[in-house]
Image (cartoon, rainbow, N blue to C red; front, top):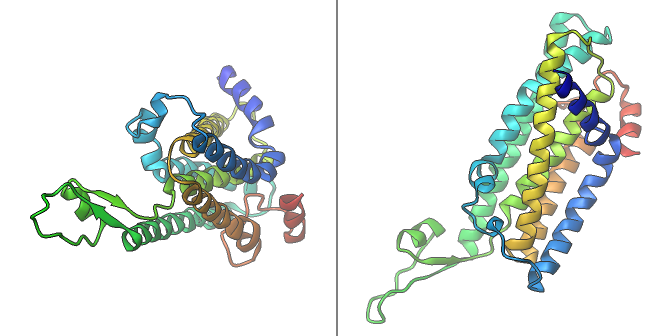
Length: 271
């Protein structure tokens, strides 16, 4: 438990700080630019990470939203409830309602993930053509989707917006935003909930590191520059519209620091 406490304290000074929320979007954009330059210049060494079947890609990135959702779900619920209750903002019932309101941010994130990934697939199908190794005397078949093409062992050539750059940037930014609640949360040292919160926080920190690392791998090994840049810009736009615009409004899931007046929130999240 002491090791967990020390680890949590060290990570809180880094990843949960306001400087990370301010700088991470620019860091992600810079990584897309730098990674694409290295890829186009053939300056990237061969590593296992360029294989799409690597363990991090298969067991983490392919289900990135599931990892993010199921770790943020208890973290947001517990920390929001404790924060509202510890500041004597509300009674138990109102604190639970506040936690449920904040948890609706996960529903918004799920909708963003679903709509954007569906849109990316639609664009790729709309702009693509299938290349197959059929015989010359065989009639040329028209394929409507990438899936049909792959069923005939063909190669689909379409505009493939990077879903990795979109989702990994959005998930990483969402996690660091939600960890902002720790700036104002105080839990008794002997409380079992402190262990729960610290465990969730440390897990989210390591998950964020994985997302950023795999974002770098995507930038240096996969996709064209325009596909990666557009994917990252969509992820950053989704974060900005929600956490920097909509969540500042009264009719929204709200921001993690639930007891701060709206005008102060705007200052805190923009400085």
